[in-house]
Length: 281
Image 1 (tube, rainbow, N blue to C red):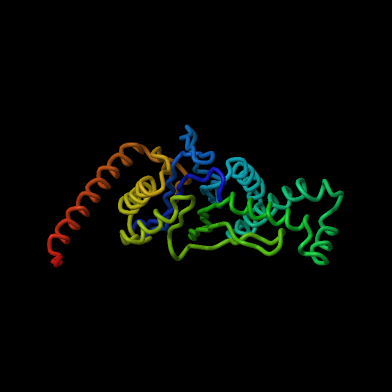
Image 2 (tube, one colour):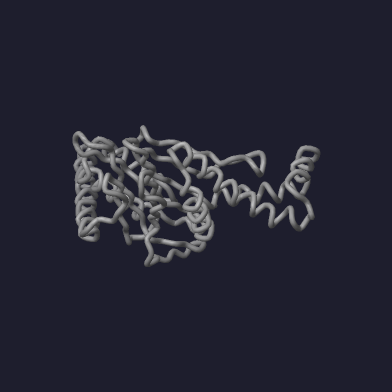
């Protein structure tokens, strides 16, 4: 179970005719503790780097782990030269957090270093301490889920770090590249947002008006399906940099009205369909 993960984050590509790919980031502001959700007054959208290499993203999971992850990511990405560097740094940051937590919770109390622990794990994989380390690793893996967009020159790429099962406490996290798909979602509302984008015929070649509208509708559907927060932030990554957009609330309000019309039209279509059904009692 992902701690403090009642949230949704969405990144979609868009394109202006004849120009480079660009990206839209959308997220709610909800933080949750167990079944209780509270809307923050701070955006979850993160600007990591904005120069020749542009990096932005959003995460779901434990608030403390998210802050630790983005702190490490910003520091390490200062020296990143390309997308592959960023991808490796993401893996290293997540792995580093996991190793540090296992070391503090299991190894230090045992007076053991990593080499001795790995030897113990190889000799006795069912040892109690190995099980404790694996539990910590799995809980941490489930409590940090990140999606990033990276622009390197003319290339715009998406990467997703998500919870994975492992047979060893020190294995590297799974990092997936979703550049060809053109969009990525994160958080408890991610599946709902993902299917909404697919069903609406999302196309990364469409312009900002079309894909921003679809991203907002996907976010609103996640609100309805998974109870994520209604407060909404929007960020753009384009050739000018990483920035917010004017009239953000007005755009969200318009999308809500469109969503309400879509729901009403679907209900009417279903009503007409069942009126045509003939069933004998």
